[in-house]
Amino acid sequence: MTNSSAKVGILMGSINDRGVMQACADTLDKFGVSYEWRVSSAHRTPADTHAFASSARERGIEVIVCGAGGAAHLAGAVAAATTLPVIGVPIDVSLDGLDSLLATVQMPGGIPVATVAIGRAGAKNAALLAIQIIATHDEVLAKALDDDRQAMAVKVRAANEELQQR
Image 1 (tube, rainbow, N blue to C red):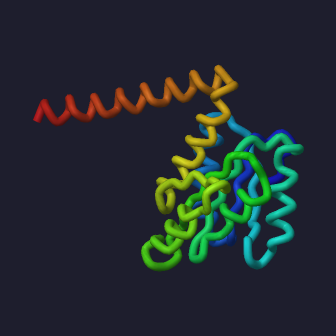
Image 2: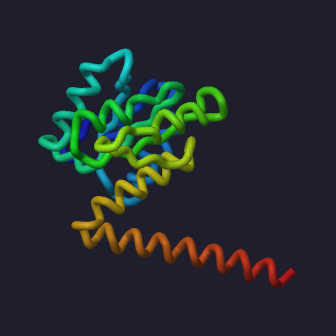
């Protein structure tokens, strides 16, 4: 999807990563945050990756989320080409995703990549972190995040009450 009003860019190193990164898209949809997403490989299409990252700010993108497995260099390659916040989602391709996690989190000083958990939970949290970043200047979005947190608390308390009734 290409969206000229997108606030978040989602990159996947392979179309095979879509199943995981769908959790990111679904969470952004839940909060009404526009995004664009595409496949772009740090290794197979480095010029395309650089072009996406280096032009993101002028297109209105505020945060970029990158999901990649294996060598997982996508988030680092993107972070090297922009000063926008970059969030890396390690994807479990081999070694239970540990290789991807380490590749994503081990950035040199000066080129930060925020790294979340491996897999779908990480993709969801990457979206939430992107939303939190955007919400620093969007009060409506900040309120939606607060409401979501309160709704989670209500569910936990209800589950506890259910346990106590047994």
